[in-house]
Length: 310
Length: 164
Image (cartoon, rainbow over all chains, first blue to last red; front, side, top):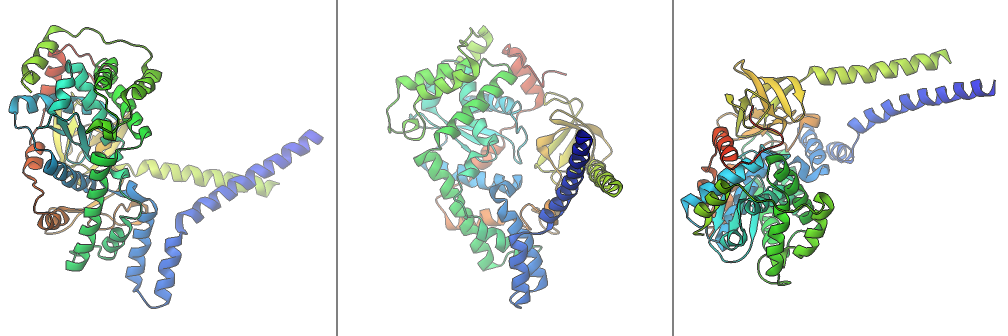
């Protein structure tokens, strides 16, 4: 009898729980701080009902922050980030090398978690001895000649490119945008929904845009991402390489070369990346002690032919 | 007790109905500039038909990260899920740029966001920033066939998404 009573009461509890869950879901669906603010503004006669509606929508977007940046907007941010990086580092105009870089890089990108971006993945060499690589949001990846010279073979170059693709697919660039930077722009955009932006609104949005570019390029070129961010890009690189058919141990091989040239706070990766040995330890948690295998001669030869002169 | 049971059943039915509704509205939008419908669920699969930004497709089946769809021209085939969004993308008249449908949860950025107008404004304020090479970079395009040959020639054996 006691046990039956218990069953009945637990059944009651379940029913109540189911009901409450539904109620909560529907409440969350319509109530928000933004909604309260917008209706208050409307009641005070400061804004029109249409504007209140717009604010409602825009503020919901703001609450979700950068995740609401559409692929198209990410693409435009990425273009300006890449163009800004190319002010400091000039591109290396070598068709053969850049073509090879793109075949390898674009092929690798198809094996990541975000193979399709708005404008696709594109790669270019930078004419500098500095050991560095940058990836702009959306998939514009730039690799220094110094970095290429460090790669002993195609597998190691694949590791470098896969790491950069990792930054793109995890949207690390967008995450570097200062909190609150986009809020004003989003509100302006919402208020101007369906219209062409006028001079002052456009200026305001451009200001947020410029600020975002500064945040991203500053992080990529000067301060560097957090260590965990680099670890995450390495982790993605291992997944991409494995799926594509490259030996992920090549990433370790590459980092061992970087370790030899490691100067804490030195120019390039010494300034923006964790020490290679620390990254190797993290990667080995994922892949164990796998060692690099010999590459087929075709792969060895094509790497030499395409990148030998870089 | 009986009324509670009824309530519980109604709650369950509502939840089920919501799910069913979600499945029924399986139209999605292409969220990349140039999308492709492929013959097989693989990037190395042959391209059956091109898709444009904002095109609506009907999803027939989902297999891992790939979706079997019917495109606006009636062609069926596979599209990678990263190229699709549930949001409706509305083309704005007289402009190549696109507005994102601004309704409820479908909202991404209401209206125009960072677009070519904003880029042009950015360029005019930052004359030292040159987009020539960015435009050149975007012209580096590799076809599925080239990728397939590159992997094959180099003896790179992919574990997934391999040759159809």
